[in-house]
Length: 124
Image (tube, rainbow, N blue to C red; front, side):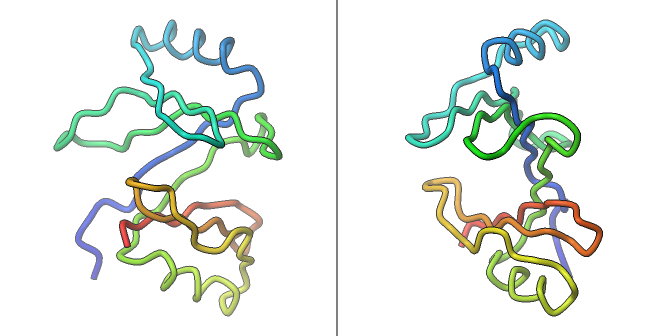
């Protein structure tokens, strides 16, 4: 039985980071924080440890366009490889097998039976 909130992270994919960052900072009257990543450009929404709700970021990633379907929800797991192994037998597709995101743990990217792309996240 899961003992955590299921949504742990979200990503809003963008093509023009400066434009998107300005929009979200203006609309929500906040400052986004740059996350260091060698491959991707991340700007994280404010996060309060112990508060309700999930955090997330604007992300500029090659091959992932913004627009309809341009948001990724990450579902929390003990070990995302376990849930990843259940995707194909249940009619889904693994788009990217478990990989490290450094100090932030591991993720797998999958397509559900309806065609929605979801992320699986774990610390191990």
